[in-house]
Image (cartoon, rainbow, N blue to C red):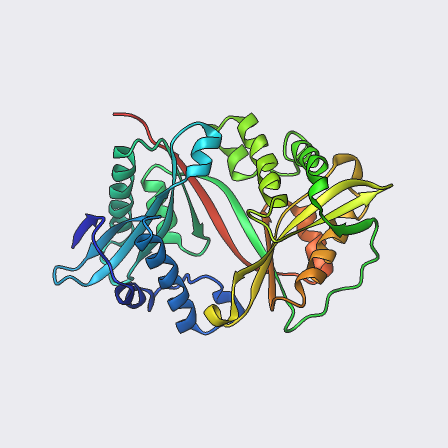
Length: 331
């Protein structure tokens, strides 16, 4: 087999590689496999063609594509944390490859070598929890587990939103809410956070920078850069919480269903335990109901309180991912 960096690939080759791939996105929702294959192939080839990602390919001696690793520099993260950072976006390899773990490790190692040559100091990746050979290959390549995220889904095609009496005033955010929401984020994702995310779990990332990441996240959300809407919760006329919303992670013409998401939520410590969070999530569902077939949300596996709230509203556990990080050392 031949392992090469930045070897050209075609969309048809990627589709062929995905035919026996077990970890396609959204597979848990009973959607058409061919559509999911095309959706995934389109995403990969678009990133490569637009030079938003680079590749390591694994080919048989006759040229057949047997494996693919894609990776990309993270511009925003690099600026925020003050070091060159990158992510491995895809690790896909045919089951017929011999010594699968070792072959994946070899492809990952070549990608890391390329990133190191570009001056990258920190690399992250996310892996389906069922993809054990990739988990082992990452561990063999020096990556460390930072968190496990569980994704729950509400399927409007099969379920009705559970009744829940709102415990606060709810509305959509306006631009004038920016300062109040920034204060909520600054408080909720620092030492008063409910569970550690992958950034706070990483000893190679400064805690104050990890705290500030969520402040910037909500700033970009309310300015419409990374969110389509934000639910704001008020008590006594003052904002005490928020939930950001993404209308479409995928569309029906791409995967067979419109899929949206509730992304980032926070409640001030003094307002917790009063039903504010559950009220916001229910309002978010009501916002998404006319737009999508499925609504997703995710959290760290140790965040039991919010998972209990989601179950109360009718969400079902759908899938999970591991987050791995590795710091790259200079020679």
